[in-house]
Image (tube, rainbow, N blue to C red; front, side):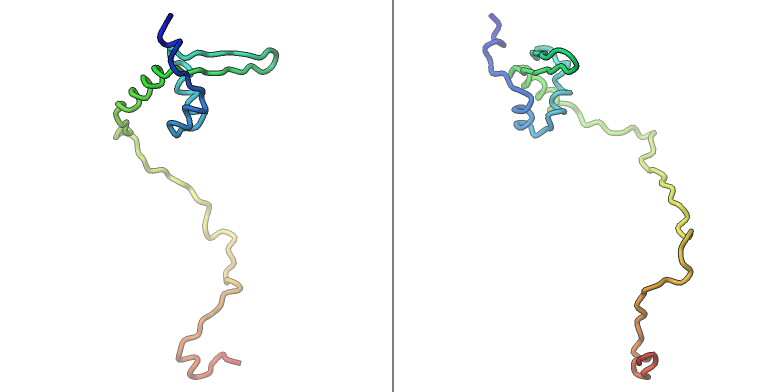
Length: 115
């Protein structure tokens, strides 16, 4: 009997909460990983798959992710994007409405514009 049969197996939700990832991320990481048990159930339109991930497989993947070097974008790509905006002056009123016009101290001293 294999030792993998007796070790702890994780479900997707358990591993996602331990590692701090979303369930879909864990599913993508372990879907094609050798050693993961896939149980398919359901007939008809919808099939359900349950992943049972042995602890040794989880440790192997975690180790592989931990030693993976940081990948940067190649220098040949331009990180800047061009965003085209519509004409900013199109359909703008010539005189803005509902704007409070502040008076200068001189205008207040002369009482100009004060009812």
